[in-house]
Image (cartoon, rainbow, N blue to C red; front, side):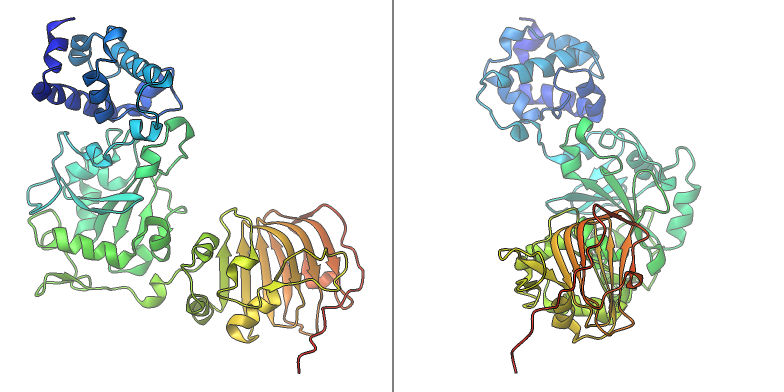
Length: 460
């Protein structure tokens, strides 16, 4: 055992030895893990490695710690340490939870670099500042061009970005945006960072949020910086778990009154200089989501008022099903008419529960004309009577059975957009093909023109 290895077994010096080395390794986590036998795993966190060394379990692997310290970035010794670590735990080591092995305090990504990171207190003179975090993201503001440049780099989480504000050795874009009263916030994705690179989706690790006094320019940019793929202000709450207003308040609280590159450049539309507080420059309509999410319906996050707001603002309801199966019975707390028992409808099993789109519309707006769109959903059975004025759109959906009974409302239509697939479609006594736009529909069987009538309502 070499002297350096003996030294790290002293409690005080062990942590001081391993933590800085592991911080350097984490900057190239993706590259290091690709060279190991455990490419599907994430880089183990420093605390787990310290426990492994402390227990004596690392002894038998004959690791040359001195070689690791002398050339830590990308060395064969680093790869051998990680292989040894996972070998030990895969053979019954005491830590069984791989998430516990790999998941570390993600704020470590921002510590220990040439750029300075302020985690609390006055941010004056720092390159970056922590604004806060939730269960999905850490929010960090770049305070200088140097900080923005580092956020663009591979060192920030092991992946680069193409944001112009971080252009190397050219701060023109940074200065121009700040002079226009723009605030920037990096949203760093915890789950993506702790996902092995092999399984991580592109463009999901970090996002640059741009807050401006103007609604159309307030958006979030993906790493690729594509102008057609930005996240609009209306989607901030769903995507980041924080609204634009909450992000603005966090920025103003931590930064606007400190001595940073932003000093003196805040617009009075976004910042009250007398009270040192954020002021909301965006209209309510801009902040309102333009679509609702199926998962949030299932979690009980939406109320009838949320759907009614969609109708009031947009004359439409758009539901992003996020690839999930649509279970109408889970909506009954919002729309009591959403689930229909098929009754005497042709070829419907008694145990089928069907999405009654007619009842859905009536539950919210009493039958006024609207557009209803479902995106990327999987439906067991859909029933449409047509006796409300509504244009129904299915975009990228899979439908097992669809029953379409056209009533005497000429303004209603059924439309299929971008890759919807239906296995069985049935037309009612007054339905005709020209009422339905099937140009983008993939259908397993030709529509079956069997007359069927909606179940009669005996209620007086």
